[in-house]
Image (tube, rainbow, N blue to C red; front, side, top):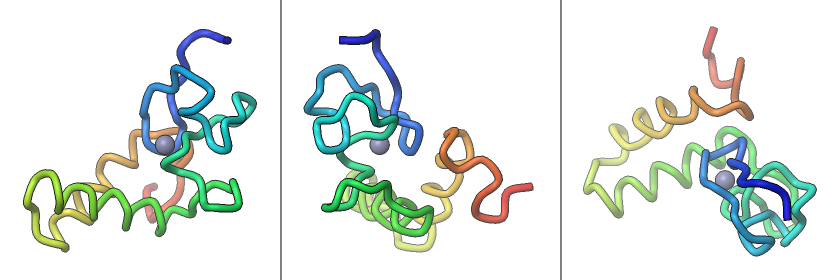
Amino acid sequence: MTGMRLCVACGMPMKTAADFAMGDTEKDYCVHCARTDGSMQSYGEKAASLAAFLVMTQGLDGGAALEAAKGMMTRLPAWKGVGGIA
Ligand SMILES: [Zn+2]
């Protein structure tokens, strides 16, 4: 195993092979950021799934959750320059 790595798309620490997309430690994104075919989710897909998570865990309404999700994503390497960020 390599040292601890962070998912480029959501920032989750990936500690074991099971945390990586498809269990593939060569990938730089996690199992939660992969589509069922193993490719990485798009900005829109990830924003929507993060927003749904925030609605569930923090009780935000849909619009506020989407804004919060996009705000979180601006800090992650996978989304630099994506989603209208200068
Ligand atoms: Zn992730």
